[in-house]
Amino acid sequence: MMSMTEWAKREVEIASKRERGDKPESEWDYGCACYDSALKAFESLCGDGHSGFSIGITKGILNRLIEGKPLTPIEDTEDVWNVCSRGENGGVATYQCKRMSSLFKDVYPDGTVKYHDNDRYYCTKWDDPNLCWHNGFIGRIYNEMFPLTMPYMPSNKSDVIVCDELLTDRKNGDFDTLAVLSIQRSNGEKVEVNRYFKEGEKSFIEISPEEYEERKKMHEKRQEQEAKAQDEN
Image (cartoon, rainbow, N blue to C red):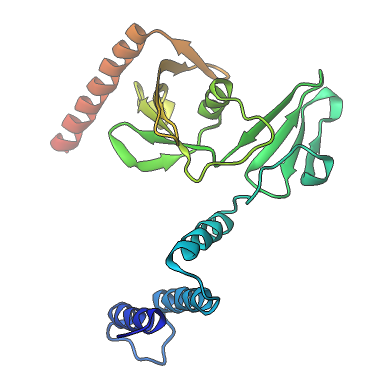
């Protein structure tokens, strides 16, 4: 019966052969190099005498390190922050966490302190969950609903903010209307939001559900007109 390391070597050989295809063995291949690195890590774990239970714990630790997440809670002490901006001319002073590059602290002139972790959430469209992005405006809404407090131990999963975007007029760019529909928390809880916004002169302005529906009709009409014009051409 094969040992775990022998089994792993065989699996990597099979996968690498498929990855390499018709390329000669002497030619470097990115995918094969990744398989080889994974095998080295696996052999190292097996060499340390891990059991099935302890290797699972070690895997969890390794995954957090790979994802840039801390292994213990972060506390707001002076030694964990780098200065990004000092808040000159009465502005907001911003600091970046040394232990977690996605975590920031903003100190306002009145002494108010706010934290935000750029990896704590991401946005997606209700009809295309594979499309993911970050949006500063939506991030502020999210952080108002779920303020980040210290000490902070980030979850292994991000919260998912389900959105919709509309464009009533092509001259306004990619979108001019925004809906924040719900938030799927990392703990499995679903939080309904149902807030709607339209583009203003400086930022987005909150609108009623009724106005959002009217703008949705404008969006659909624009799509129909553009599709018709394309067919005629």
